[in-house]
Image 1 (spheres, one colour):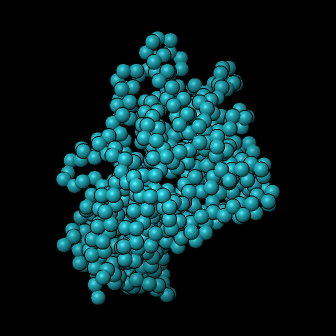
Image 2 (cartoon, one colour):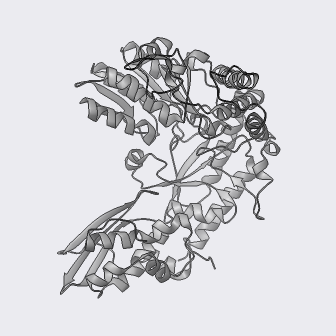
Length: 415
Length: 126
């Protein structure tokens, strides 16, 4: 097991929110799985673009418009490089939800029909369930689920068995589970899907912010992620797609910017990636996300992963000291992303989250947009603590103290 | 003493009144709190347009369970016309704790389910 050498990256001062809270309580932010806090460089990039370079993109001939164009497309190039993709196959969306819907509508409606199956897993976020439910219902196809085992993991042989049935056209799965934290063997999975002649989609919302991701190496046909969990602004997501598949697809949203030319009755489509970007795009947000991936690259994603793995290991040790606390998902930090979901006997997760917030500790409670998984786990909800680059051991200590205090409020040890 | 988790709230949470099934019953409903996936159902026995008995079933946080337990004692004996008139303020006042905006639905889930059973109106109480 790697050592617990690096338990702080020493970057908290880069994130102004930690200094700027109006009340006396410290901000113990352990909800980065929901959204990350933003470093000053991202805030400056967003504001700087709006202040100094704002114009609409793509058709302006004056210098300011050309600056906006250059800023937008250079952000795309930075973001594509961060995940090992090419700019032409890096499409901006609103978020991962929109990225998955884009595939479900544009690829799914042309390629899925009666008798076909879409395979997803029991650990998916609603964003990677509902678009497929709607597609399958509309096209007369079947939606099937790969099971999650007792360790919170998927089985490659179960995937093989599903693919051997011969009807699976698309397999969609999370890179890292937002509830269990499980890091799925995505490269092995996409290779199997490809060998079976099916198409793969990976939901990278939780993965991209916390580990080095190379979409070429992973080999997914589609890989979606979102900016706001990766230190960037809300309102910008990314869909990487395989070029030859994107070329064949019809557009998702239609209108301005995504056309080559428009006649009275028909239109032709713009080239990649703009074919999939209808309307005025989120330019400042792209610039902000460009600054975010630069910031992460400078930290080094391997260092980020080691920091968060070590903090997660420390958190798992701490949680084990809380009576009647049960963590769901893989037992060791090595196989999991930077989060822990848990239940405490006699305490509803909402009450847990409310009580720890009295000490400034921010965690999430609920079904985490994964109700089918909650049913598999036999719980209605869990509390979830997730760490980011700015956290250190003091945040975990505060969480554990607050959990022990929460049990006292409910007098759980009283005779 | 915690502002929200007062002794009587914890007492109703740990030993909820009027919880379980009620057979036979005349009215029933089941509702979810979309925020947390909590579930609450109710069985109501009616005689002469009046609630003579009721039982809640389900699971939820201390606020939602205590609210259901406390309300159950008030609802028994009310006429259906009276239940129709109950609003969010009635429930919040009855609960007697400062309920934040995010926990409001926890407090109101039981009234939503009871009003749903009695009137067929499944909207959140206002």
